[in-house]
Amino acid sequence: MDAESAPLLALLRRYARHQPDQWEAWRTGTTYGPVHVQLFRGLPSGSAPEKFRPF
Image (cartoon, rainbow, N blue to C red; front, top):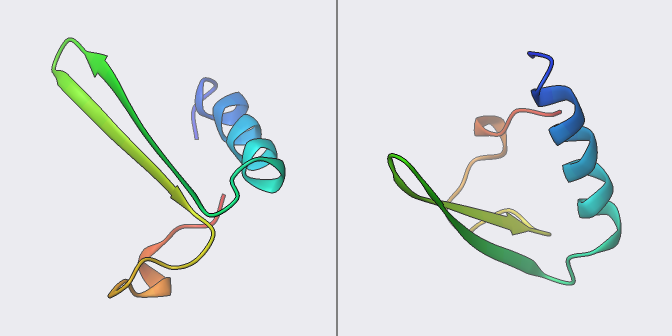
């Protein structure tokens, strides 16, 4: 984890503990095109838990 990732992950962890009711879906623009981010309380259908890295 680099120096920029640590504060980002800490804020995501804090947000995930207190904010989403069921899910969040975000989109942001970058110089390479849009980036889509989804947060779920549960495991998305068809996903294997071992494919997710803890942080």
